[in-house]
Image (tube, rainbow over the protein chains, first blue to last red):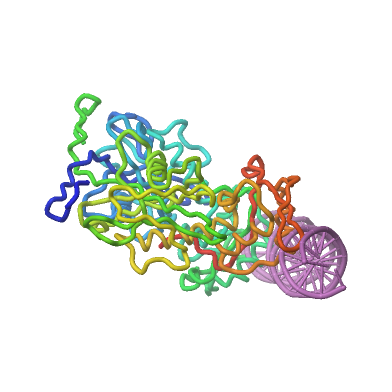
Length: 243
Length: 243
DNA sequence: TCAATAGTGTCTTTGAGACACTATCCG
DNA sequence: CGGATAGTGTCTCAAAGACACTATTGA
């Protein structure tokens, strides 16, 4: 910067600027299994490869606004849980030009899926996280792996899992989601105890019939979510951080 | 993007681009107290205000490289712990132009301080986090508050505190750092128990004389740090996240 | 009645916290 | 020896895990 600079003399074009994109890793549950939304690229670079949806930010929108816009464009959903994941900025991660990408995680409810294929993609699909494509476009393998790891980790000490559930659900369904995302079996009795103690659920009059005893349905108490976090468990091997 | 695009036809100048900066919140311990490095701005905007050091990224360096460069420029230190904090991208956070800022946290050892005042600043100072300036430049109040909160939170489940310590240190010194950063007193006996159990420290032959019984000095076992995390404590009121 | 699923009770083990005790230096 | 600081031992209490038990439906 020059001396004596002020609003009049400042010239923003002096520095060469990178492009900035927002990528959104969109998770949902489909038949009790964790899925992620990927788009298949129509054009160079990485034509035909699956990628995390995203796009360039506009000059008049914040990062989170950009993420919401992308989310809406890809899935038609709004009012979802959205969280910034990490910013990826290696020099050659995009062959077109220098691109810095701010990655977000979005959790959408199982019921709200209205995918549309945009002009830039040949296909859009929910992929189960257990069986992802071999190789994604750009550094998106890395981005996705980190998103999954963060999601697992945060489940243990936040009420994040509720974002994936419909309005009414049973406690064993909730347990199932925890099992899905944590990748291990949990004890039924202990799960009941902990979730009840947490006081995060509200009992409803509804039940759902099945093959055996009907199950009671519960509602998530959003008002409690902020002051009382549901710490599910501590894991010794916890790894949330990149680097 | 146009159809039929490829490496030849792609034109990176089609989109208007924001500026991207890297800001580094640099922490250290000075006489057992947590301090942060701030620079006083010489020019518009926010002339005279204190700010978190940072600057525009170069096109040929990654985000982390940029952060290391800034760190080196401001403090002359290298080989430090560096971690990405968050990316701030509100539209009007900088009056000059649209600026997206990737914030990093750096932890430097108490002994390695070689501050220099750069051309862009009138002053550079270590500020104790307990007594910061009233109002910082840009949205740096927010950035700094978030950095401190993240640092506190991470101390509880990582070996991060060791990054602030010299090569040899006593267990009670370590306890003191935890107390400083967590902002509360810890029990001596329990601290000894936990740190010994963690097996993260290596006893040395060195001791240090003081007024009472001399204290044994220990070394941090970097090799153990990755596979065994030192989970100091779980706090119900844990808040690491923005939003 | 049994199979199937929902939900509860209880014993054991672990580990955090409180706090009293012992150890080793200097004068 | 006493004051000062370093370091250990142990009791209690609460929470996590294992696991057996009871409950309610339909066929």
